[in-house]
Structures are given as C-alpha cells and as structure tokens.
Length: 318
Image (cartoon, rainbow, N blue to C red):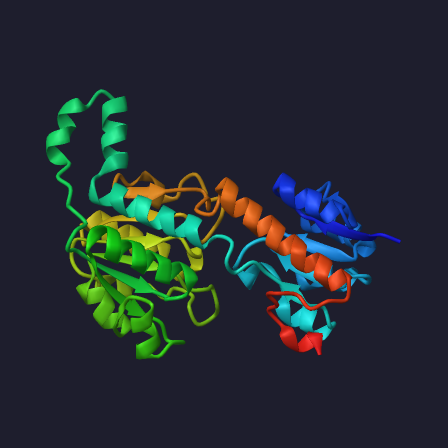
C-alpha cells in the first residue's frame, strides 16, 4: 500500500513528480493549524512550509518522518518529534546560492540608493538624484555574523567580486575555521564597530533573539548598513527604526520581520532608507526545486526504511 505524504503548501512540480512516483501526495486544503490537525492523522509523512505546533505532531499517529522545506528548523518542534521517534529532515544546501545572491543584490541596492532613486523617478522627483550620493563596495568592509553555508558564500562573493575586506563572527566555530571560510575572525563587538555592512546568518533561538538590540546597533559604525535575510527575531525592530531615523545607520535591507506579515502601521516600512522584501530571498525557481526535491528524496528514503541524508535529530535513527 502506498504511503501518504501531506504537504502544507504547494511545492515545485519536479518535487511533486518525485514524491508521486512512490507515494500518494496531498496538499493541505486548509493551511491553518486547525486544518492541519484535521488532515494529519492520515499522513505517513509531513512536508512543512509553515510553523507547526507540537499538538499537530502528536495528532499524526502514523507519522514516520517530518520534512522542512528549507533550512530553518524553528518551524518544527524538533524535541517533540525526537520524543516520538520521528526523524526531522531538512534541506541545508538548497537555498545557499539564492539567499547569498539576495544579500549581495540588496547590499548593492543600499550602497547605490537604487530603491530610493526608483521611487523618486516614479514620483516625478528627477532632481532628487543630486541628493542620492552612493558608495562603491570595492574596498569596503563587510561583517558576516554566522559563517555557515550562506555566510561563507557571501564572504566568497564579496571578497572575489568586490575586493571587500571580510570579517566573520560565529560563536560555534573556531578562528581557524572562520579563516578557512574566507573571513577574518572578530568578536561581535569588534565586527559591528569595523564594518560598513553587517549581514546576519544565524538561526533563531532563545540565545539569538534580539542579537542586535539597541546596544549592539548603537555599537555599529556610524553610517553603516544592516542586512537581515535570516530571521526577524534577530533584530530589535524598534531599535533599528530609531537608528535609521537618527542617521546612525545609513540604511537597512530586511527580508524577514519579527511579525510576518507586518502590521500596516509598522513605522519601519515608512522609512525611505529601508528595503523590505517579503521573506522571499530563497524564492528562485532553482532554490524551490532544490528544496522540494531534497526534502522529497529524504522523505522517500525514510519511508523505504533507509537513512536520510540530512537529519536534524539523528539519534532517532538508531
């Protein structure tokens, strides 16, 4: 009898075909917590593109594997899955290039005031061009907080393409490893003080909540730019807003926010020196295909009784 894979949201067509070759695939008809609780009891596998509560996992009495369509495991109650003996698989390599390119693209846009210039022309303010004095990236310093796959790729691009000086901070890596990934090791405080651009690439945990709080943002170099395409909880939104309004920071690019979607009256959205995108850094055709197919392949491996390639709680595999 073919197993059933429940998907919270649509995935790339190639990934659907992959799963359908060995399983029955159902897309959640009501992508809400209540809808998931209703449909998950009949699922042998769950592919996640939205946050999942522990009670939903417990309701999945047939579940043999839970897969994250992406990298961040904050969407899945991994501890609950581990308690129930359910492997959690994810796609650590799938969005590296896409997010790194988004970081570099928004860095260029910030340095050259591309978004502000576009808005000025559309509003008939051509003469505003004289106030939009940008900066070259070559020779500038970028500080990368979190030197994992994406952080290391950003370091490589910035170093090779723009001749930038690259600083790195990662409490989970030793200095030699950080150097091997293309960055000069720094404490967080030193990195913030020296960098013209700071980009965040760390997971969202209790320890990293408001990693850049009012004090840390205040320690950043005057006129620097902040880029956060990782998780919204890493940055204190109110503190960032104040730093941008005061001119302490020259600009910011954020692909993630503390509340998504944001309230319409969020002051950050009204500031001219901010680029905001809707958590879309990884939304490329290539990344979506890699995420869907990588997750699908590991789901099928588990359902066949094989070991998955990327498991967040490997101790359940025995």
